Image (cartoon, rainbow, N blue to C red; front, side, top):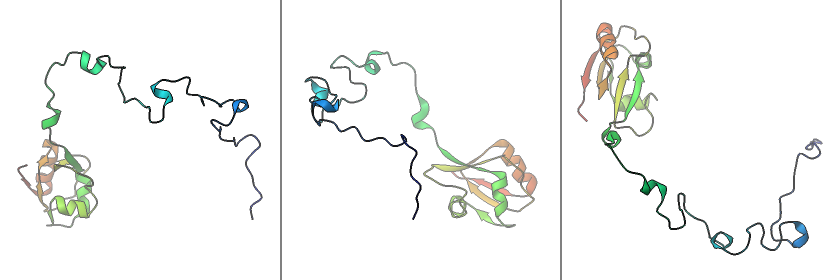
Length: 148
């Protein structure tokens, strides 16, 4: 059995709300007097300004946001492809099984990070950077870009 205990003053008692006037948190229990925030369940949503038109709706909206139309790719660097043997066929399913792609993505993009040993890989991905394409061709790999 352990005989260790916390240092004196390291542990504090929980403040007990509504436990009499002398507790320091009695009567209104730190909620002030009346009003919406004094009631049970009386919390206001983020950005609520008491019925006044919220700031986010007052400021002008300008321009065009293209973020809705962007394609989110899972990125795989060249040095990650070294786990595959010579002549292997590599696609998103195989990359996921090897743990190189995780999560919810709309496609796979090969990036030119790291070095790739000469291998005759057959890649089927959705995108590849220019430096990755050059390095893959130099290593003897064939790359096929899929339509998304």
